[in-house]
Amino acid sequence: MFLSFLTSFSSAQSPSSNFSSERDYRYRMMQQRMLELSEKMGKVSGTEPIQLIDRNQSLLPERPKTEAQKSYDALPGPPVDPLPMPEETPWDAPVEYQSEVTRVQPTNQQIRGDYYFMPMIGLAVTSYTTYSFEQSDRKFHDELDGEWGNSIALTGGKRWENLMTYFRFSYQHQRYENNDFSSGIAGIHAEAEGMEESYSISFGGGYSVPLLNKLSTIGTLGIGTAWRRNSFNSDLYFTTFDSKGGSVTTNLGSPYSDFQSSMVFTYDLALGFEYFLAENFSSYFGYRMLGLTSNKDFEGSFQHLFELGAGANF
Image (cartoon, rainbow, N blue to C red; front, side, top):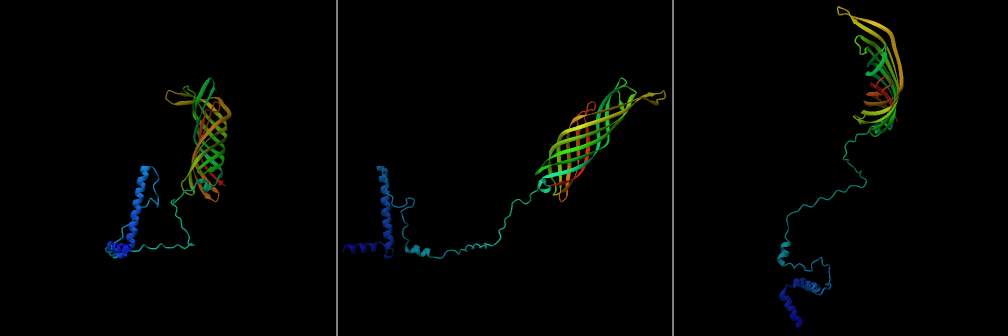
């Protein structure tokens, strides 16, 4: 009789279709209440509260939906286009990669090679030196202006990307003259000419900048030593003026000659262009300023060389 009473009471409280859901809901409510009480007691007594399930999840279930809510949820919603299915790529399809670097300029080492050897010939222009000498108790001191000269050189070296080093063996020849070599005394002068030769060994380094695949510009700086030899020849003249303003030049005779040589220090600066011809061959055209220190009575000299070369790369 008591069981029939409970059954009739449950039927009065909820619909028969929701009996199981309502019971589960009441059970979870009692379980949640028990855990809350256990947690409060644990805080008071300092003991560990009861842990029945993962405490990161709430024990409170959702209340069972009513028939009206179920009917509303069953209504159709707005149309939704399905997501496109991903295209399957066959395993044997080639994989293409695209680099962010669109163009890389190759270095001179990559274009021409690690080592090079290049003979050169050069033309010397606009150089000068200063010389002093004494004759007939007169001291002469003046500049000798450079005439056309020439040079021959053998160069070789190594490249590291766009950096380079070189060794240079060269011979330079230059002629000088001055038709009014001053003595510091009015009316007395000398017609002088001279010659300079040098055999030099130098080494240095530089940097090359590729302009095109076959053309690059080169700048180098080097130091070295040379055996420098100078010669000098002159005739003394005395110039007088007559009453009409004309000049009369008299050769005083006693021609003067001198010859000196010594080891000197050299330094050079070069700028030029190198063009890659074919296979392992390249050509060169550039300017080189060659400086030599003093050779006894001959002061330091400068030679301006325009060089042309052709060589091999390997």
